[in-house]
Amino acid sequence: MPLEFNNKHKKYLPNLSEAWKRNLFFISLSQFITMIGMSSIVPFMPLYILDLGIKDMESAKLWSGLVFAGPYFISIVAVPFWGYLGDKYGRKLMIIRAVFGLTIAVFLMGFAQNVYQFFALRVFQGAVSGVIAAALAFTAANSPHERSGYSIGILQSSQSAGNIIGPLIGGLLSDFIGTRFTFIFVAVLIFISGLCVVFFVKENKNTLPNLKDITFTQNIRIAGHAKGIMYLLLLIVLSQAGIQFTNPIFPYFISQLGAPREFLSTITGLLLGVVGLMSIFFAPMWGRRNDKKDYHKTLFISTGIIGIAALLHVVVPNYLYLFPLRIIIGIFFAAVIPTLYSALNKTSTNENKGSIMGLASSANLFGSLIAFLSCGVVSSAFGMDTSFVVAGLLLLAVAALVKIRKH
Image 1 (cartoon, rainbow, N blue to C red):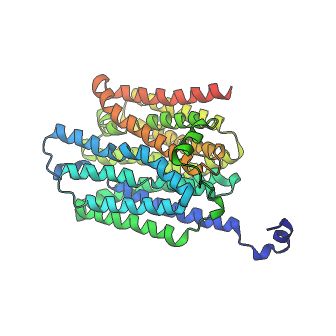
Image 2: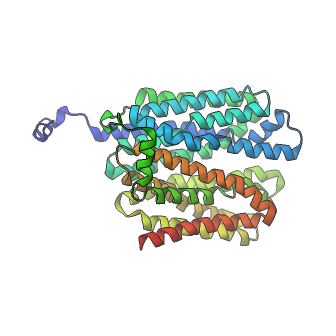
Image 3: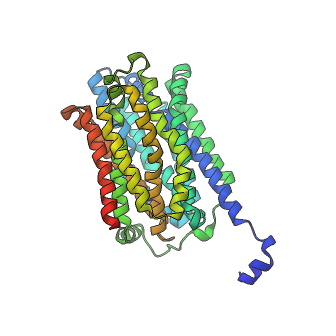
């Protein structure tokens, strides 16, 4: 359409600004609901393993680790493939596929008869889901380029908010209506989030590239050779590993610092939740900064401060001193992954945006998998304090890599 026609007949054209804002609202709402559902099953999964017939505590710990890690095994490989299909057939379609796939997986978990079925369904969840990567790819492609950092920040806030509320809802529901019914309730909740996308999100088909003659492996190869992509993916792996590293032992750590045993779960939830709460408030601010400033300084400051805060965990005399540290971590945690995703979005082309976001999500998942599998080994062999040292050093390593790259 000629530019003159656009100017002369502007009132007859759709308001694209309003379209992307409306999409962002409903995608964020859907992510908020989905994250509530996904995180609400976390508090009672170890207890569910006991309900499924595992009575020996050592075996229960092993199965708990496997069940928590289950979704990551296949999703690391599957998510980039779904991202490629999103580039080819539509990113909205991939969100719908991921949400409804997650709905089926969670629903069936409520009917698992033994721990083997439960683990298999967790692996199935990782294979069919990829909802975060799909939402990121859609938001990055359907937002104005100069507002992509802001949009990703809003999306991150909605995910963080869901992750804060979810465990509280899941804990209460499992106590009042039972674990199996909670899985069914969560599945219904996730299904509703999918309906938000189906009926209220409109994809701009002009953002879809022509991949008729480009295969999935070719697209991944192109992404792998693109300038700066592999560097940013490495930073995501290291950052996520550092951020997640101490989560499996955190309740034991605060118990060691004098937290009363009868309130251990509540205090753990508060210390973990305050990080997400701060992320809600500060993610949009960091997003706006990413739209205006180079990402190197933001990433250097945020990972450096989180790394130092992680190291300080080992010198506090009492668990109450962890609260200010967790607040500081939350403020700067809001900058790390969204900043890296924003940098990837600006580095990628429209042709490989879905695949790049898929690779970013895989890097994120891989970092978490490394953290979960390594933490138990490190803390058992060298003590829990060592896990916080490793977490801090990983984040300081990211800061050092960013500083070196900048210069």
